[in-house]
Image (cartoon, rainbow, N blue to C red; front, top):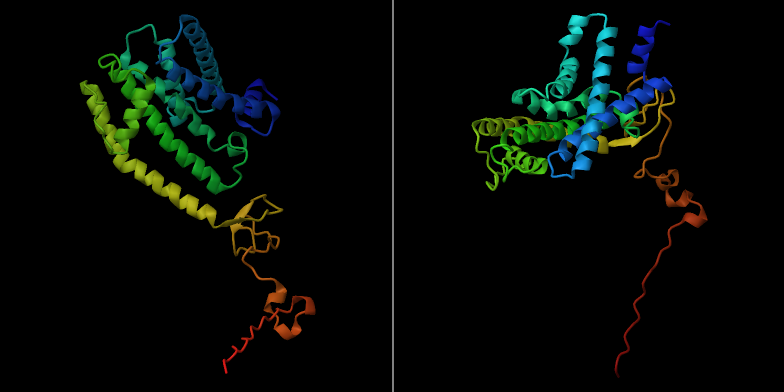
Length: 297
């Protein structure tokens, strides 16, 4: 096997040991990098700040190496450059290489690094472990989408407002609080942006909250109701674990499902008349006989 084909297998094939570890390492590094981005918005000791800065630099170097390898292995390199996931990766690593240049509009894109997890949501066997159904994967995707939107807006509003309004937007969590309140249209008014960019960002948050959040939460409720009506019956052929309660065959491969008695189902003896029941199962009759009251003579 050629070196190029081996690299493709390591990056894409989760059935191999190396591929599984690579695809576990990438989301772990994304989460760690996002946590570092949040931590750097707080007042930290110089030693700690140096450590997390070096860790973040090492992570972004690894992301850059992965990007170069994927570009080198791509058959259609132009399509790769303009694909959605490739652009997300480029947005993640660009601020690191341009940090010495005063390009604020590039640096605010650092919060987009969490979007790197989107590509990995499809590999639910690796990322979610216990989520073995399509409904479970949909639930995970909806929850992640809502969280990613709030996280990105929080990072953007922090980058825009922190320099001009440091009292109200002192840390990432101040921006996170503002994003949640704004996107849910609660609007307490205790934290407000002062810059024109911050106000534009707030308008976008409100529009997103009105349009996208109810839609995603509606899908989430539908999936919760749908999943609650499923029963666990393992298909011996394709491995699908959850099916409709009255299903007799697997909806994926058509294999006959094993019989499973529902908790509400009656036992066979419950359908027999009392005359055919065993003596031990005959119902006991309790007849209350009233005692005649004594009459006074």
